[in-house]
Length: 275
Image (tube, rainbow, N blue to C red; front, side, top):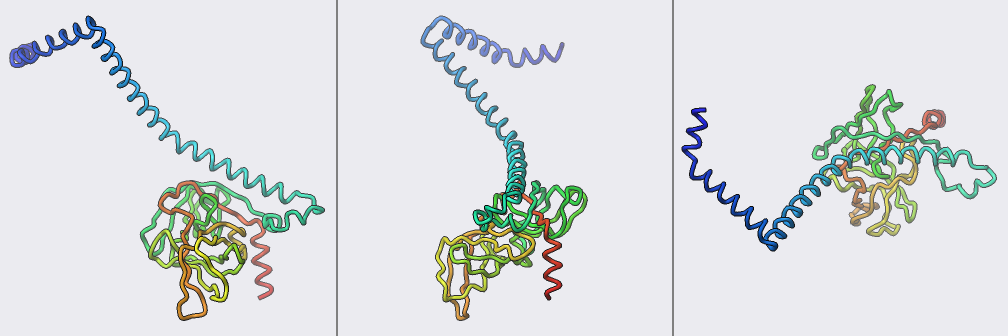
């Protein structure tokens, strides 16, 4: 009680001023139509602004949940398309001859990225699914329909993925417009670009040409986008130096799809016997 009295005695002038100021504002607002309207509008504007910010915050936190739902739906859709394609009547095979899923059976699983690196020479990222979900090393990983990496190792609940922006990463790739193929590799300089090698100089190459997977390996399906040609030059050798703008933004990786080739073992065994 003594402390309260001391506080009132010390700040009595300020307290009296605030009380009188509040009374004056109340009288002005309630007795004057113009000021009353202004005050009501300001209060409404303030409350609307607060509600908008709260709504935006809720939508932001809900966005991740929505993205996860969409990723799972995309995975289910890919698997459904695979089943439909495999069950098509052989009489109409000529209509689907370019559809690689008819010749190779793939299954898709969605996952989330839990850690990632982009500023090293040997970059990897971790996803939240492992052997318990049917994942295994040397499975393809794609993000937003484009190449992201290859699984390097698995535990029960997690997997380590070798990123495309890793100096050890190699993948057969081709120019979509003319079918000429080479090898895509990262040069360790810019996480947004890679190099397409072994393309002979006698063919036409243009800026903007789409680069995609060939499907020659048992890992990636045919026709997965890698990126587009951003620039090229003719050095002293017989092959172009082609820089590819990667479609995958490795700084924004969150939802990915893992692609499992169900006929991979058969493919590998056949290659071994012929070699």
